[in-house]
Amino acid sequence: MKKIALATLLAATTLVATAQVSVSGKISEFADNTKTGATSKTTLVTDPTSNFTFSANENIGGGLKARVVLDTSLAANDPTGGSATKLGDRQSTVGLANRVGSVDLGRNLHSHFLAVTNNDAFGTLYGSIAGDVHNLRGLRMSNGTFFALTPIKGVTATYDRTNNGVGTEATSYSASATVMGVNAVVGQYTQGTEKSTVYGGSAKLGGTQVFYTHSDDKGVGAHKGDLIGASQQFGRVTAKASYGKTNTNVKAYAMGADYNFSKRTALGVNYRNVDATGTANDVKQVGVGVTHRF
Image: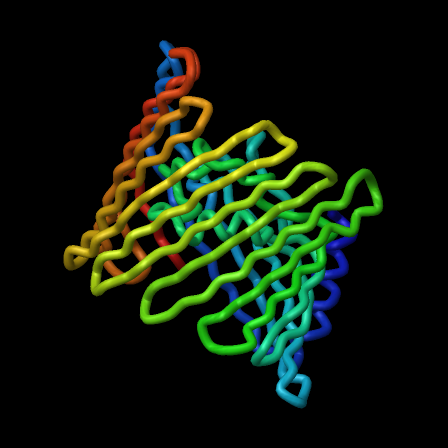
């Protein structure tokens, strides 16, 4: 991982003189109360998408661009504590891209995970129940090669592969198509005899958007899950809700709303409830927080 981050940083340094460079990020903090079984605790929680991103791209001719991304998590509630992160832990890639496709090397979110979260009313944000309903297979791949192809507008295919040379390598792919606001996607993650597949989609009409995903795992237990959700825009307020269940008797739901003071700053409130097998595993979580993008 350190070698990938160093190589990416060196590539970024080379590009800086002639490239378009940008710095962006987000800090999202929630005052959180979580009750697991009979145990309740109140803490300050950083949304998992809080980050600091350095990116650069350079036109190198013939419609081709070189690009670098270093995306690092921000544990803003305790940046020096046990949740402190390493440079490029979210994404550390260098690659080439043109109008029909791209290839990137390094560490990034894999296709199966994105097929789930891109079709969840909460996405990867605080309050999501996607991880309670679906097997997300580790979210990211390190030492990976990431391919993406967009042959025509609205159609995208991706393929990812780890190249760590240790143990069983993993692959992930997705294919999606969007027509008139309706999106359909299939994604899969494979490692050895283990295979996780997800089918889903979303539809948008005006300020309303609905989502659905179904997962089916083989070789990692006969796990199946279904997740539905919706979001609705009411002026500056975005309301969202989701419900999911599995064939292992887990039922979960989440509700939330964001008030957008501006395009960059929002106040949010979320509630998550997970009814698992056995009361010791049941979860009730509520949080109120502020998000600012820069």
